[in-house]
Image 1: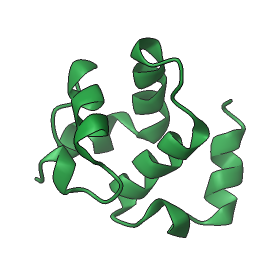
Image 2 (image 1 turned 90 degrees about the vertical axis):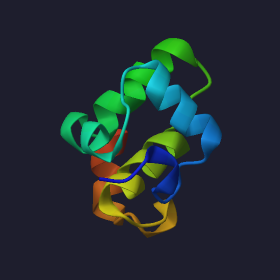
Image 3 (image 1 turned 120 degrees about the vertical axis):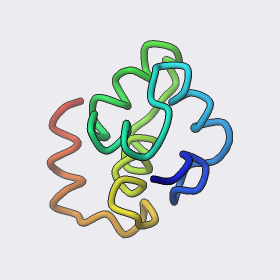
Length: 80
């Protein structure tokens, strides 16, 4: 289990936002999923954009957000 800031795409600011919404570590993020984590962040940060959602998905997968598969990105866009 990694600290949030050790995950790809997760800097201190996003890690702090995740902690504010009750997501405290890698396991919490993986169990809730990127979409639900992003929706929780949006409740405290109305400027949270789709790029943050891609970053969260990449963090769960252990990759940079640019490498999230296009098919997954299209699937993610459908929740918006």
